[in-house]
Image 1: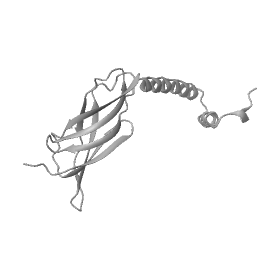
Image 2: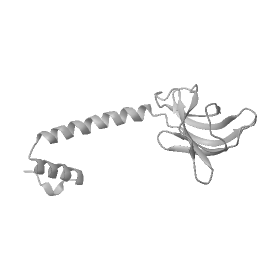
Image 3: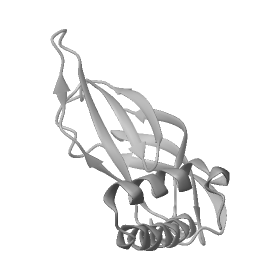
Image 4: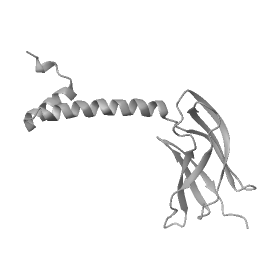
Amino acid sequence: MRDWKLDTPLQAQMRASLNYSGSRVKCAGMKHLAIAMGIVTSLAVGLASAEVFGPVAYDAKSDELVVTITYSGTNPDHIFSLAWNRCTTHPDGTTDVQAEVIDSQARDAVSRDFTKTVRLSLVGLICRPATVTLHSWPNSFTTVQVPKQAR
């Protein structure tokens, strides 16, 4: 006979939900869900190409952001681009916008880290001046001020 007092908190919670529902079918479903989530997580970790941002600056001559990016993959040939979100204008007149940094090889397997400095075009940025926040999966971000475009 099993001593229920030795359950982990998760096991106790699962057992409590079984007792409440009165069904062992849910336990089997939860077990399969947990296994599936573990498989998906391990696959995602093997394919994750999380970018980490280093220094970022605005280059007025080329109208580009110069960004140092550290990323994981099997090769150094990743190409990065920007996907712009909507501009937000605040009551004080300031504007900010977020842009997702897109990795052309986001599904590249993780084998080693690479660092390179890239130039990202600001074509498509319709609001200026603006505080631009670059973000990347899962939780990397950096901010830079982009002035009004010279005509």
